[in-house]
Length: 268
Image (cartoon, rainbow, N blue to C red):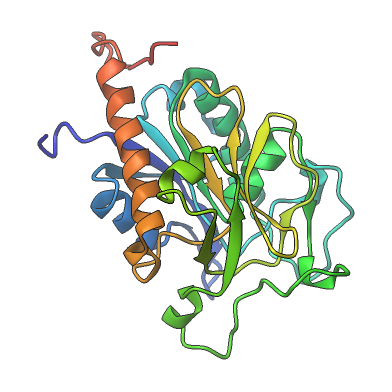
């Protein structure tokens, strides 16, 4: 497969401001490089333009959708939550881009791989809710990144997760029902959306991985960060990205040829 035949993976951007007041659409390089090197696909950054897009038209041009982590949190009104604390960072235009795009991708059978904030977005898009500060809940651990450690070290293994036997994720672990993952999040899934299947939980009960029960195509959503170069050395991380890439290649192969306008649609 040449670079012209590589599956196209859409990666929605975050909107960030610089010190001078300008705004930029941004995706971390680790996500881009993981899609390119581990999934062997072509990453395409999607500007966060909200309702400017027709989500189905956009999703119909993709062979896969990756939802990344971010310093920002989904706005609580999206899931009926209480208002956030004043210092909480939100990205409403990203919310307006990703949430409809998730529905469109699932409708069309476009493979979806969600990470951290993306994991939370998937749950919210399908009707679930979020905990805004997990570390403040009784019986829950502090899952936030240790800011005293060097940046790269924050992505090393930190705690085990229990993998659901017979699930999608279990098939990627080589049969292991417990694996180690990193942890860099304050928010987490509270009420799991009805369409989601829990694939893994942490020892303190955080929902660490889910799939979509009735999805037409590949779906996988995880709370940890498998995309960092350190985490990509783990067999499970490689298996997840390879499975996503394989699903994107199958999606591309099954799609009818482009019409005269260049628009591309996926078979149901």
